[in-house]
Length: 412
Picture 1 (cartoon, rainbow, N blue to C red):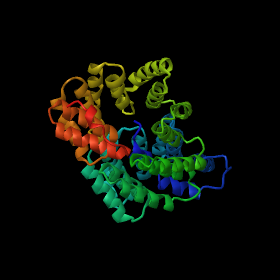
Picture 2 (picture 1 turned 180 degrees about the horizontal axis):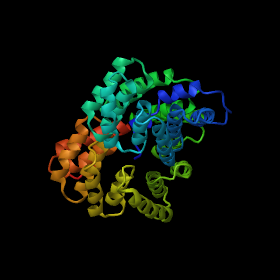
Picture 3 (picture 1 turned 135 degrees about the vertical axis):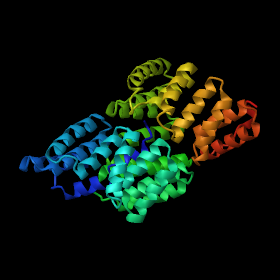
Picture 4 (picture 1 turned 90 degrees about the vertical axis):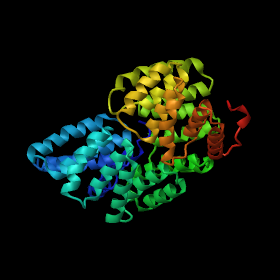
């Protein structure tokens, strides 16, 4: 998934402390690589130190976030088994196990694995972060909110709590509040944690872009790329800025660079869309075809590109039945706002607009302010004979884009 946003922050805090305690490494190493190097030294010193294996597994998960390479999560799981072989079921190892599940997008499994840890150590703030992340990604927003609040109650100003609270504020429609929390998180992030700081800065840019503040978003993303050169999350968001500016060729270059660094199906989908916007139709067609092949290979897995696959079938391939097939499968797994939106849109393109209104209303009922969702809602409302709601949704979308709504072109 592209927007794993809470999961992206899953390794903050504990990982930062690990890196801070590490011996000084070569400057060319990333924070995660430094943590990996330090953990390896501890293992070389004592091969029976299960905590060192926990530290290495955690560092591998951090490296997975830095590079967007899921192989690091698999490596982390293998290392963790060595910890359990030495100390079966040790608590810290079980915590890292949940981190890895979240990193692999196995949210339901992560939630179930976190619950016994929470019962055993109800004051463990990081376990509350697991509950926040898993519940948010599954669409259990009230439980996510309660868990995030408990984190702040236990440790006010705690960086992982701030980023999670910011994500929930964004979902609930308070972008300015989310931005303030992200600023607080940035200020509390150690200067040595270049990737954490780049991620937070990128999220601030994402919020600015959603508020229509394109120039401010651009500046933040340039800062993020200075902090962590070639950072794939920042490249993707800077491409959104370029596309918003109608500088499509530059957007293509940025998305190609991101795809080279993180060759995931969802990143290829974005590249295909940008190629089409740039008028490079033949290349876009080939990219879409390759995307479909890659996406179908992972569609039954937890870590998939189903949201993009649904939109591809619905908006580009003119295959509504396939869009609904994928959307229904994803809808059985989770009810977060993005899945609800995709499911509603898949119902819409199949002419089932009366059914689409419930998931669409459920998504918007959370409070999210999203241009694409508002436009989807407008179309669905229009098709179900509700022009008043359709106009309202179009107006909200236009306000977010900083444009005057073109109501005369609406289909009602």
